[in-house]
Length: 349
Image 1 (tube, rainbow, N blue to C red):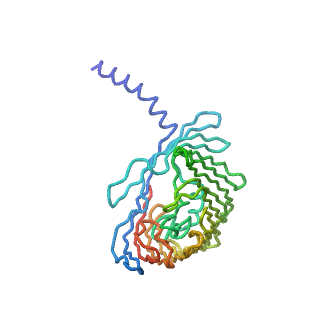
Image 2: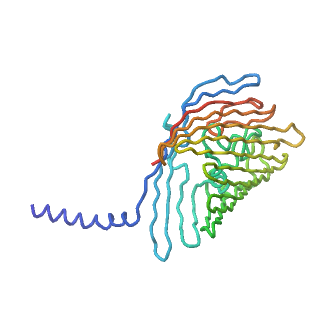
Image 3: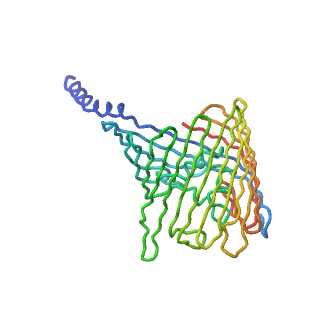
């Protein structure tokens, strides 16, 4: 008996430092489960997409993150984030925002895979995020041309990012993607930056991103770039938001897009309307695309972590535009008009 007690005491003593280390530098498990039931179709064209029902994942995720205090105001941090589909099982590990970095009074430096500054700052203006049928990428961030959707709304791999601390509400983000795919003829790049100002009930900002030797549809322009101005403003129960974008691509006309929305909060209820519009951006000398997206939503917030969302979305494409749903897009031909209704539940933990 004494030998067993001694052995237990020794084991307890050896485990204590590890337990204390975890207490001092906690690791947090977090996640989101978000799914919608949808009825969708696409009208027009030679072969319209027949109405069908589906259950769709809206970027459900499971993550773990943590920090370690290194002393002198310096911290190490990490995050591993995995997407999963509650409606099916075909996802990999840590393919979402994942990385490791250092943080101090000078800001944060990250190595890994992460959302670009463009994506992080612009989706903050979208009440639907970049999720659901009516999300931002239905018409913005480079959508609606050559079958491409949300080209600038991306999570970059092989990425180095710097995030500044907030100075009087001003924050800067910088992003650089290593050119690991360089060949004798191509030197691919994907780099960007953003600056935002947050003060009280106002949020405004500017984002820039550029691609070099990156594919666009069936071609690879030597350079593509995007500029976005955005912001939202709240007064009482009303919140207004807007984004204006301009994309340039070698060999293509200048593409312009804009979005405006209003959210009216009545207790736990929220009424949402969002309109998006994109035009031009097609090949020089060709017919130019134009589309518009209207999204109506009703959201009931059971708590800060759980809500119900009902949504109706209608997209109008001209003969050459390919604007599509913001998430879980349909396979359509140019000129077809997707539309649908959606009912969903989101819970975060």
